[in-house]
Amino acid sequence: MPSNSRTERARELYLGFAAGDRGAVERLLTDDFAFSSPVDPRLDRAGYFARCWPGAGQHQVFEFVRLVEAGEEVLVTYEMTHSDGRRGRNTEVLTFRGEQICRAEVYFGWNLE
Image (cartoon, rainbow, N blue to C red; front, top):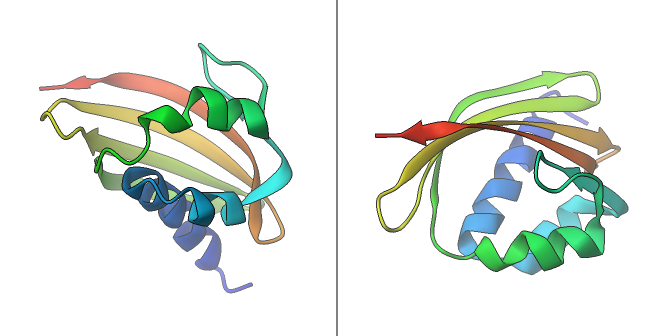
């Protein structure tokens, strides 16, 4: 796998979420994908789609502050603008198994003005 392909797959995850392209996102995730955030610890793949996916497809705009590959992980910090103009900043750690994402750890940032 070329060194930048994990960072490109990470980018595809967020862009797929913003577009509401569930098929594209499903192809990026392993069957045993696990998602954790401070409010949603240890969701499985089905739990992720039940809890998080309703927020997808709202044409959010992601500006990537950092996409850093470190071994099997990609560290992602982004600033997101919602369709109503609200903005926020988060950092996430995506863990890969092969070419797919098997875990996402979300660390909330703050709202931006």
